[in-house]
Image (cartoon, rainbow, N blue to C red):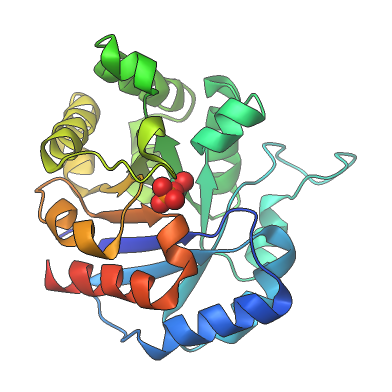
Length: 253
Ligand code: PGA
């Protein structure tokens, strides 16, 4: 049985005080339930303080990015997987569309980051998804295949036994425009079938999250899709009541 994962991507937001208030309010509404894991991903300067606050709450800590380098060294501004482990992280996002689009991360670099995360004993949450142009020109599946293949070529199918994939259509991120239930289910089923070509069992067990304007009022229908195993939530994860309502939708799914 796949458990759900409800992950909050706080992006470049927050302060010591705001994060403390947010995470305390979230923690007050979380019950330790094996069916749903909750994860928060603050900006890296706040991993330590947020990590301390969520100790014993059952909420997991994740980072938004990591360095692809296998060993520490002269890489100014970068953060090594061992540092994230040190701060209590369990998960790390790799290949978020904002990293790909704004910071030029290629499929090859994302594959290196995925490898670095696993080598460091972090669980990568691989973000993939098409732009609006790509969807409208009928390339959605080709884009998903290409992004998956880069990881499969570098890391092999076995790597997906301990990874999460987030389908995040770029046109739905931060736009208020959510994929329909049919669009989400069809993309998720496609991702699972692509992985199943390599290993049916691993494909069946890997958790596939949907991301892109998930809100309290659309979470239940998205989570009811057979191949949607949770969500990667940006804007709505910055409001405790909204994020907890999304968590409740996963518990009820
Ligand atoms: P959003 O962001 O929920 O604000 O659309 C999702 C994400 O970027 O992970």
